Image 1 (spheres, rainbow, N blue to C red):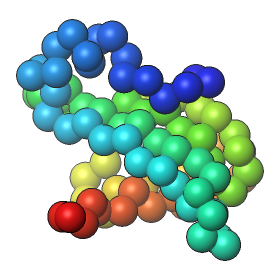
Image 2 (cartoon, rainbow, N blue to C red; image 1 turned 90 degrees about the vertical axis):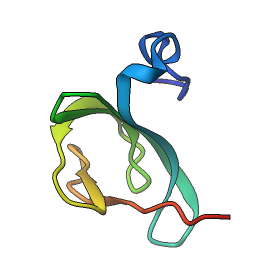
Image 3 (spheres, rainbow, N blue to C red; image 1 turned 30 degrees about the vertical axis):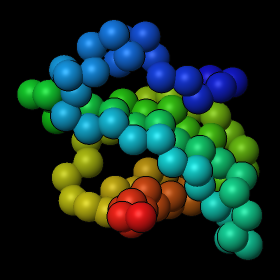
Length: 90
C-alpha cells in the first residue's frame, strides 16, 4: 500500500458498496502523518481497510467489523487507537 488509490474492484463497481471513505490522519501534535481508506460492500458486516498509522508510520491492510460510530481502528504495531472522525459538511 504505497499509495492510496481507489482499488479497481471499487472503482469499477462503486454502486455495490455501502460505505467508502478516505481520510488523512493526524498524530498527537496535530500533524497529518497518516491516512486510512475504509470500505464495506453492501450486505457485508466487515469493513476492509488500508491504514498508514499517523503515530508510527506502519502500513497495514486488513478487515474489521465496526458497529458503532465514530469508527476506531487499532494499529497492529504501536497499539494506538485511531479515530476515523465524522466528516463535517462544508
